[in-house]
Structure formats: structure tokens, C-alpha cells
Image 1 (cartoon, rainbow, N blue to C red):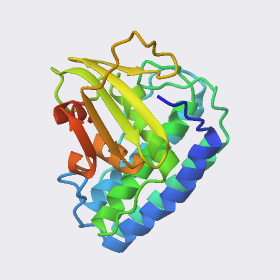
Image 2 (tube, rainbow, N blue to C red):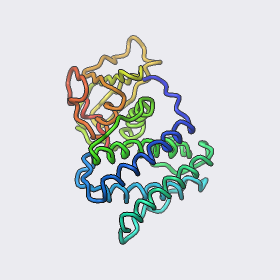
Image 3 (cartoon, rainbow, N blue to C red):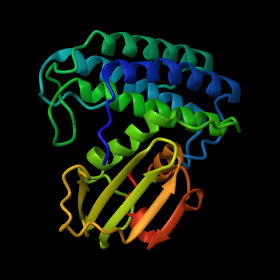
Image 4 (tube, rainbow, N blue to C red):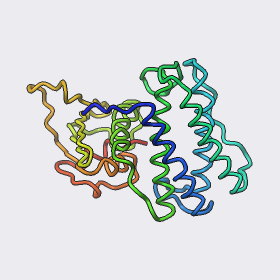
Length: 253
């Protein structure tokens, strides 16, 4: 695994780019378009989900405590479409302003077993927005790739956060090492699967005597790797060698 040097400013820049692009895409489609990456969802569902997530994080991240917050609430009834779009715009703007004002080391509740700091949310919302921006553009019939460095960090987030926390959609009975290679970012990852267990290997400290030989390798752009891991694309977008089931075992959910 290469060391990614993503920072608060990098993640906020991604939010500033992907937030308006997402809103433009859902405004273009209207409320009833199907969202291919979220089966059963319409664009109205996507807007409702994102608005609630942004509001929730905007309220919890600045508290300066690690106590678990109240559950996220989706207001009812659902507002009219133009009001929903305006609400999403306000939450995007307000959340960016809130996260920009926070020291990444400020104590904050987070859901994985990691350091309880506000920087988690700066990173998490950048990736939440980027993948859902792709969803919204897919609903509009014009999806564009996730920016290369952001997508590479998104792959790392799946492997260092989602999967160790138990958010796996793929099979959990497989064993072996998976090698992921981002062709456009000069990044690679080695992941060891032991049934339900998973370990992201640090290639900078792997010893020659370690058994890190891959039983499967998946190669593609960073965006295609991330979209595959997040269930938005099939493995046929990638060049896969070895056992393809090991690649699907890395899908987050």
C-alpha cells in the first residue's frame, strides 16, 4: 500500500467540486429518475439521503466530544422538489463551511474503530459526495470518473475503514491475498482475506519472507477500482487475474 498524502484541504476541495456537480445532475433529471448505483432509489431518494447525512454530520462533528449522537432523522413529509434541491444546496454549503472551520484533530464521534477525530468526517463526506455525484450523473446518463487521487484515497478508505468495520457485501468465507493496482495513480494495495477477517498490508514493511503473493489481481483506473468496490461497477471493468471471487469479497456495503 502506498502512503496517500490526502489532507483536510484536499477533501474539502473535492466536496466543493462534487457537491455542485451532484446538485446540477439531480436538478437535470427531476425527482423520479432511477439511480442505477442505488437499486430501488430515485433521485428524490438520493437527495433526501444526502441532505439528511450532511445535516447530521454538520451537527455532530463540531461538538468536540466522542459520545455517540442521536440517530439520523429524515424529516417528513418529503418537501416539494424545488424545496428539496434548495435544502440540499444549503446543506452542502453549510457542511463545507462547518468542516472547513474544524481542526482535524478535534475529538469527534466516528463509527469505525479508529481515532475519534473530526478529520474522519472531512474524509468520509468527500467520498460520500464523490460516489453519489457519480450516482446522480449516472441517473442523468452522463457519469464521469471520480478524480484520480480522490478515487485512490477512496479505495484506501474502503480497505482501511469500511471492510475492517464489518461493512462487507461480498463473500466472507474466502482466503487469500488480493492485489489491487491503480494504473493511473501509481498506487497499489495488498489485502489479505482470512474468511471474515481482513488485513490491509503495508507494502513498505512487508518482509521478503512474508507470504503476500496474490491469489487474485485486479488492475484498472482508480475510479473504476473504487466504483467496483462500492458496488457501482462489475469486475469486467477491471483486468482480473486469478480467482475473481476474491475481488468481489472486497465489496463494501
